[in-house]
Length: 255
Length: 234
Figure (cartoon, rainbow over the protein chains, first blue to last red):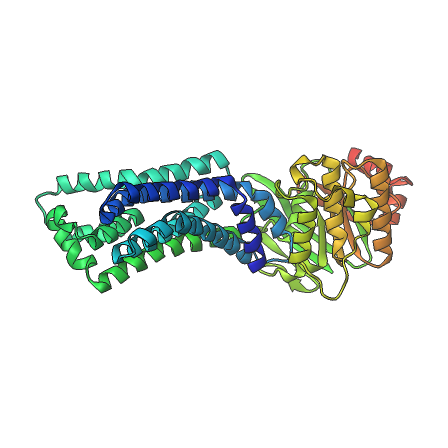
């Protein structure tokens, strides 16, 4: 398994897109921290960039990469290798190299300028988000044979997670404004890894007071240690479930 | 050595394989022939585990190949259209395969690499190669690890006469060593004298599996192409 991961990572790191992504994150985070004299304000600006860019790049890049390595996969499948090994190696290679570029691009500046619990939380959720969206991407690409369709699918998924989901929540909140939904919102937030990450980071920043009564509920839940651990477990579940489903599909796929 | 029993496979509505049963033994050189789209490549891919049959099973040396992967150590496969990572050079592809399939006991068989003069092209990227050179790489890879079974899907298509002569010599040499060789092809005249058995497929069905002598006496034709042609027109 290690051998294949080695080839996958070597291949990805040679790719100019990943290098451009790392450089972009690096420039963004450095300029944000240098422009703001208050580092925690810089962190807040960085938050929105990370929550938008990291899922987009992770999901689109991984999908295109999987489609483009169909030859490589075909070659490996006819060799004495377990399909499980091949698939997990591809996943680990993608998740590893995208996490690495996030760490170099955003993690190092965060650690330099703001190595507080908030900064660490941001680093952790950024890494988790990279893995989650690689996992969603490989599920989408294994279930769709057509490349154009597959890429369209993941872009829609990204739109759903980063924009549409919030719209739906707002809609529900307004429709059911007469009912006490605050506790239900905690559960609903688990259905979107991006929202979950955002809540986790915002609560570390002590700006939850701005979010009204729901914010207080969130504070009560996610502010405690067990709440944070639970939220991270849910994020891990978001990474493992699509991976497991895609693996099951790949093992019986015809090539 | 390889037993295929009642294997069926559907792609959507198309029946690619329809209840096919074949037994192949060591030392045989089998030609798998049939018109385009008759299921030859699908059959070969099911043996390799690249396509999972809907029903039926395949055993290799008495072991069911489903969920198994180690048996592929003993198979050399030359695909019809060799698809390789486009950004890698020939040298890198060969090194990668050696790395993945490192056989401790045997030294790799690099006869074909030398015969095809691939050493001069080691630094060329796969996407710049012509169809023929790709075929040469595929052939070299299939023979590289001294497998007991060789599965060659249209081995001579796209090769120039010189290269296909080299390949044919190599196949003959391996056959002498008592290996099982499975060749799918529709240009048979070149391989006439190698083959000991013929499997004929049509529309996913196995039409017959015969010894070449039996086929010759049945049809009264000495040449394999003629013999097949007389069956196809019947």
